[in-house]
Amino acid sequence: MSTVIKTDGLTKKFPRVTALDRLTVEVQPGVVGLVGANGAGKSTLIKILLGLAPATSGTGQVLGLDIATEGSAIREQVGYMPEHDCLPPDVSATEFVVHMARMSGLPAAAARERTADTLRHVGLYEERYRPMGGYSTGMKQRVKLAQALVHDPKLVLLDEPTNGLDPAGRDDMLALIRRVYTDFGISVLVTTHLLGELERTCDHLVVIDGGRLLRSSSTASFTEATQLIAVEVTDRPDDPAFDADAAVLARLTAAGLSVRTDGTKIMLVQLRDDDTYDAIRDTVADLGLGLVRLEQRRHRVAEIFATETGGPSDVAAS
Ligand SMILES: Nc1ncnc2c1ncn2[C@@H]1O[C@H](COP(=O)(O)OP(=O)(O)OP(=O)(O)O)[C@@H](O)[C@H]1O
Image (spheres, rainbow, N blue to C red):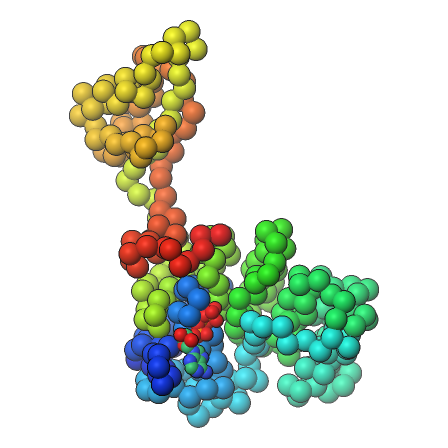
């Protein structure tokens, strides 16, 4: 696998703010999420990777090309979906995407053919002949994605593609983004400030905060299993006054297991060995209770973020 993006000590200073602070990161082929709160430096990084803005210091390569000297070669092979609305309201999606295809060097016939295919792929059919001013946000985001894909790039950089979409629209867009890689083999770097979106969509996550790298690792390792089992039990139907949780807690503790509650009806039992599950099941059955939940806890991306930044207050957990 060849590296798709590589930066080394990448720094971008504006007069009053350091937008990127010695960022060193490597991205392999796949769907990669770039996550950070508003102002973390995501859009700045994308512009520098495209060779549209110079870095203050540090180096970087995209598809093996130097961001400082080979910007136009990078833009030939990379598609870019900007964050903000950039679509002229009076032209149709077809006219616009054909124009973008021609701009990236496709001959007229090929541009028309690729435009039809790409718009169909992102789910725009009859409406592609109507002026874009009348489109919904979801349709506009699809056109923006289509223009990023039309010249058949090896990599697309998508800046907040789910912005402004309702939950169903977001799910559709994320599924579409996933297919860009699985169906066409085009690698994706997608930015978002919504952590919850990434677990299902991305293979790998890069988390930045204040322009600095917090963490870069596979999505699986972000959400890897902890050594805790979440247990929730029913009350006794014949004896609602019986404190089921306290009884289970006392029994498991007496059996040498470490148990804590998290303020809800869920108890967290430290996984000791394979017998831990049996010990919990037996205890619950002995007490005449039922099990509502018995599952190994997984880290969620949002929890990691909270641990490493001291609080997720400025990052929406979606
Ligand atoms: N052209 C500029 N001049 C001065 N400061 C800038 C400029 N562009 C960005 N910044 C600042 O750099 C920091 C990073 O901005 P950037 O837009 O990269 O963040 P972001 O993570 O993409 O956030 P958002 O999702 O809000 O766009 C912010 O503090 C921003 O105010």
